[in-house]
Image (cartoon, rainbow, N blue to C red; front, side):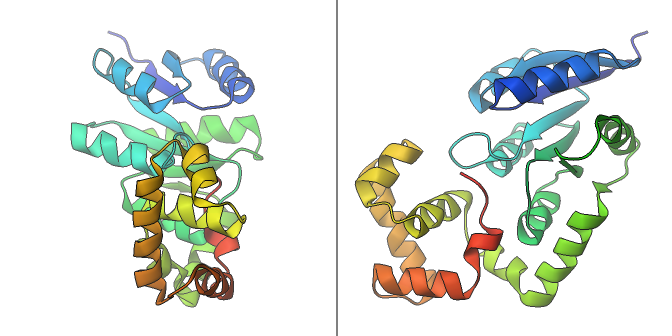
Length: 217
């Protein structure tokens, strides 16, 4: 009977994806069933493969890895999910765990830690390193958790682009969605922030230190 831990690897960056793949293939008891560069590719694989754990790039796709985790839940995926992040915030980490993610692994940590994280997660434990745990505690104290929960992944992506000074057409091009959708999302952001203008939205977002808790896009 096959006792290997079956792993689906999903990461947008080929260098990191291939490096992680080589690392995990060299570990006894691990088997890579697929190495995917996009969420669409991963979802196609999941129609025929049944991995025990999915390693997900937090920044994959337009709406990020959390959007993909939500899709997995809709499909009834019964395995574990380990989020792989280059950087994180307390709000993002809290939301990831609340969405059903079993752990968060920081890419800067040693490869041996990833092996340990996978084993821990497969044993039913949560994997969160001390730095991320501290950020989560600070997010709860500061109210960042509530701010994050009020926003969808797409709203976060649009707000980040607004803070970068991009126009609506530029945001639509960057995120690959219609400009009409951008206008709708910005209206929703106005409502949630209590802003009436774009400049007010930016000021309020900066006051809430949004640059610290918004995910990379």
